[in-house]
Amino acid sequence: MFKDNKRLSPSDTLIGQGTQSEGKLRCEANLRIEGEHRGDIDCKADVIIGESGIARSAISARDLTVAGKVFGDTSMTGRLIITSSGQLTGSVTATSIIIQEGGQLNGMCHMEPSADSRQRLLPEQDKVNQQGKDSGIKDANEKSRQAG
Image (cartoon, rainbow, N blue to C red; front, side):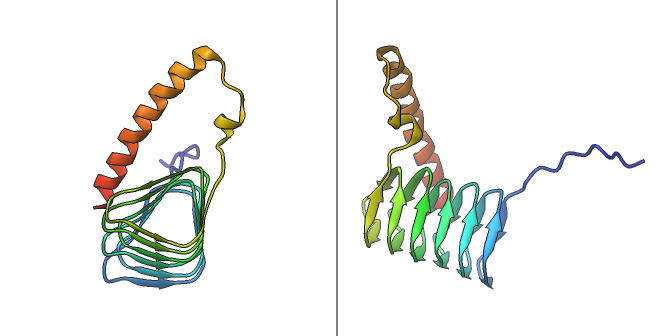
């Protein structure tokens, strides 16, 4: 009747509008905040702070998209995207930062090279990397659209 070999897949976590949460939050899957959260966030995947979202947190994530407000230090292994409605106050460590017109970053910023850029590129890899950058821009636009 029940299979022992069920695969559990991580599902996205949502802190909805009108919801207030407090405390340390750890997650393996994507996290979206439309309400308010106070406390550290440690996420192995992407974090999105929606337009109505407020995070008073130190945030560690793969990618962070801010369309609402973040107060605290942030560290990403990937990129930070601040949309036109987004505000981030605090220190930032990321490999890539995109700030749309109207977006605000108030604090210090530290850029770290990604693992890919640490390796010396061969000429034939340049074309592949350029194609990857083009798709990265599309990804950033898609995440901005989802956040807003």
